Length: 313
Image (cartoon, rainbow, N blue to C red; front, side, top):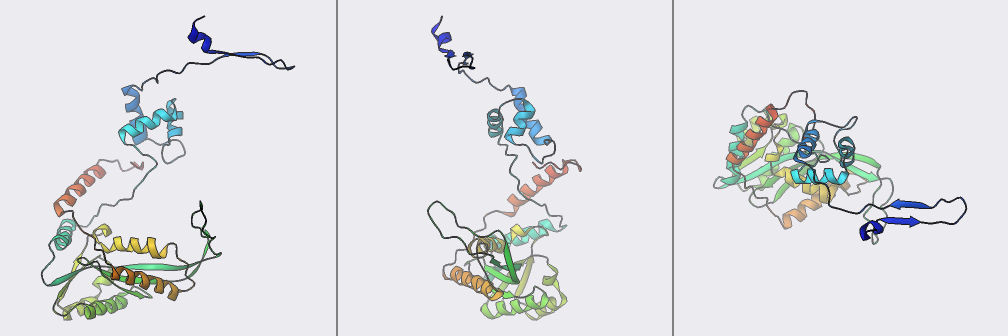
């Protein structure tokens, strides 16, 4: 008997009553059978253009079951093509008729700020919740992450008006109960007091109705050093203060415990103070031409998708 064949046979003998001796061949390990180009093409098409029955996206196991191959084979094909069906990112292409005009205006202010002026990215972070947990967090210990209860008690909300100085990274902020035109005017007066009188004020903000209210327009007419630059609709990514809001949420709010709205406001003001003690400005690098090119490609891709196609790609 050849040595390889002899090695591939295992004899299991058991002399106990009721147990039958087994002679089972053990297959030799060999080189994996390569996946044909046709099969790879089929995997890709199936992944991108269909969904498993009753599910929203393919997994390695569901695709392997449908294709009759191993999950490892599916994973190798997906990795080679850069496919990650489990991941999804949100997006929205603006339908603003003046998108190009507004984009060029805002990016121009970022890349070439006016002389003798401050550029402020301004927005409201509304409905910030003062959440108190129903039980205290467990003590920290080695091998255990920080903990908090999944349920909470809501103790009210506040709205943060914030204006990020693009050049310095300093943020002017003010917490107010609501975000109506009256509160916006109050914040504008705060900015007017804090910005030196010899400087023009260029503010980048969204198209929220509060910002274009008649009372606001009348106030701006009496304060000609204020210049508003509106971002296109569905384009909050163009306002750099949104990036700062994310930092605030991650570092001061999400894991906080607030027994009252004043406690929440105190935490926000403490973060504002710490930020302004050591400000780090965000740097805008993308040109209007680069953004318009990407948006154009996105519109072409969106237009090529049938209206009834709901599969996330």
